[in-house]
Image (cartoon, rainbow, N blue to C red; front, side, top):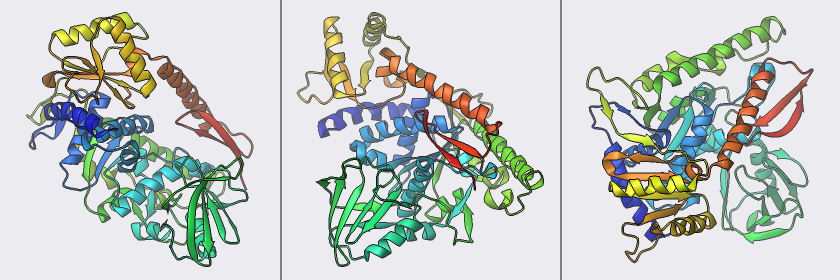
Length: 474
């Protein structure tokens, strides 16, 4: 994202932010669409005086959407790159499995949780988006988590075998060759490991106990490629076997400075948290009485319950789509979702023209530069002036502005005279395919929770519905 684009987009988003911001005496902001909540959360984080902002949503699916939208708005308002936005805005999903049925969370889920905790512990995270159930497990304290992390640069002094021990402690599995996330190997003066969230593994070459170089490498061919200047070993776990002390997630966050807490749809958050906690309690009782597993950690020691989180969540600012104001505590905003056109470009163009006639600034967020250029061509074919938002010569005045980024849905902020369309509002086939796949995955998981398949546990990636493996119980 260029500086010019950042300034132009920042100006438009700041105008919307002013309309969405609520007075200090109004604890509830109502009328927000899901992307509107993400924008409001980013705006709130900018006024938090450097404190972490924790956004709590009902489910993991909403965490996924809020995180992606918040990254787009964070990049626009802060002038940050996509990489910087991803480091500043982090998801904190639930475990997504029942440990009392012998199920372990998928590596990607465990790593995402640990990465968010690491960002909180180091102060690098600005916004953490958590689901209700993600707050239930107790985790190791910040100082223990940090002992399993290390930043490596050329010249860093560390024994390769000590580094191997640290990687094992962090939750990485030793295997050769390194081909998948969460694995590492040591061969003499070379250490390979594949950090969670990275596109390629990293190869460290040592001279004695000094890191001489760091390179990416192809996990298939094992050939080294790009030189990098540093890498951070982040834990891929949140609980450590040698740690007898665990803390609630909210206590972990508070230990690094009291966070600003925002709750999206508080009633739904409470309902989901209570439901999952009750399911865990019932599952534990079943495991102990019917499966004769007295060795399991009691649910009261492994998880918190609603009473432990009620006070901080109940006192937090709330974002809601609908709310009844009975005591003047609700700030009502006018924020409506964009229409969905399902590929009907002519109807979309008519809506664009109507928005421009009423004086709105119109923005289209396209997923890629190529799609942005194609959108410009389509608008030109219909005689609608349009320009990329990073154009800095003033020629875009009155035109439809096209930006590049990822936004789940468009919306209109009436009081800011701003109409935003997401690419999927207009050309939405990809989104519907993804939603159909996600629905099938969720249905499969629902059936699986009540189905015993011998001693096999099936792991499914919730984000893309990918079947990723089987695990034999011991």
